[in-house]
Image 1 (cartoon, rainbow, N blue to C red):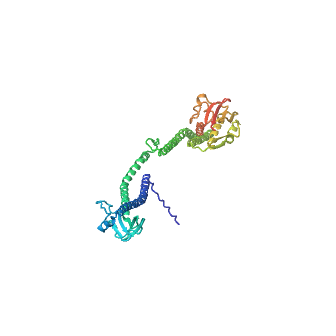
Image 2: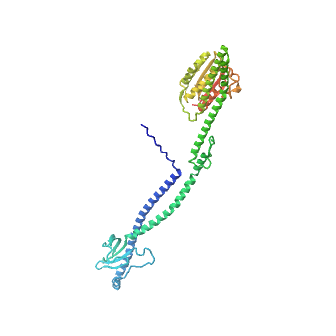
Image 3: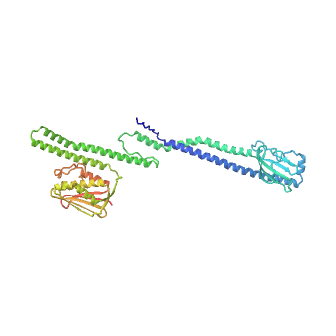
Length: 466
C-alpha cells in the first residue's frame, strides 16, 4: 500500500503595506458609515424638534392675530367678504419650502372658515390644544392646535411628514455625497502616507537583498523610524556574531592546517623509514615516533576543537551556581594519573562552601587546562598548590615549583600557539591551553593574572565577580 503524499501549501507572505491600506480604509469606511447613520438620526431628531417648535410658534402668531380680530369684531366681516380667501397664505416666490406649513381656522360650529392654500378643506385635527398626528389621504400630518379664549375657534398649524423626510434625506444625502467625493482623495492621501512611512523598510529590504555573501558590515541607522531601529540593531548584532563565527571557522581551518602540517610530514617520514629499513630496532623506534606523533596530533585537534567550541559561546552564557571545591576535586581526580606518574604532590586549600556563577562545562575545561599545564611543566617530584577563598570576590590561585616563565612572556603566553622558549623543550604542547583559558575567563567576566610563584614556578591568579 503506497503512502499518500503530503501536499504542502505555501502561503505567500502578507504585505505590510496592503494590510495597512486595507485596515485603514476599512476603518475609515466603518467610521464614516457610523457617522452618517448617527448624523441621520440626530438630524432627523433635530429637524423634528425644530419643525414642532415652528408649528407652535406659527400657531401662536396666528392665534394672536385671530384674537385681535375677534376683539375688533372684524373676523366675521372678513369671513363674510370672501370665505375662500387664503387669508394666511403669503407666497414667497422661488423658495423651496414655501408651502411646508399649512394653516386652518376652524369654527367649532361651522368647521373650517379660513385656510392656507396648502391646507386641506376639512379639519387637520380634532385636538383643541397641543400636538397631534393625523392621517389624511394616506399622508401623515403633524399638527399643533390652539383654541381662542372664548373657545369658538381653533387654530391648526400642520405639516406633512414626507416634507420632513425629504428635508432630512436632502441634508444627509448632501453630507454623504461630500463624504463619497472625499473618500478617493483621502484614500490617495492614506496611500501616500503609508508608502512614505514604509519607505525606510523598503530601503532596508533593498540593502539586504543587494548584499553579497560575506558582506557583514553593520547597516546604517540614519533616517530610520524609531520602531525599526531595534530590529536593525538586532540584525547588526547578528552580523557581528556571524562575522565572529566565520572568523573562528577561518582561524580554526588555518590553525589546524598550519599546526598539523609539520606533525603529518614527520609521521609520513617515520612511516617511510619503518617501511624501508631492515633494522628491527630502527623500525621499532620509527613506529614509536609515529605513535607519539599521532598522540600529539590527537591532543592538538582536541585543543583546537575545544578552542573553537569556546569561541562560539556568546554573551548569553548559561550559568549556574557551582561549588569551587567540588569542581576542583573533580578535575584533580581526572588528571591524577598524570601527577602520579611524575610523583607530583597536589595540595588543595580552601573553604568547601564557596560557590560562583559559572558554566560547569567551561569551568571544568578552564581548571583542567591550568592544572594540566602545572603538572606538565613541573619536574618529577615537584609540587602544585591550589588555594581559593573569598573576600569581595572569589579568588583562585594555582602555583607550582616548575621553571616558570620570564616577565616578558606574561603578556604573550595566552596567544594561540605561543610557547615559551625556556619551556618549549621541557614538555609537549600545542600552545592553545592558555588561549582557551583566556577565552573562558572573558566569557565569565573574570580576571586572570600571571606572576612568579613563591615556590619559583608560575602562579596563575583568577578573580571571579560574585
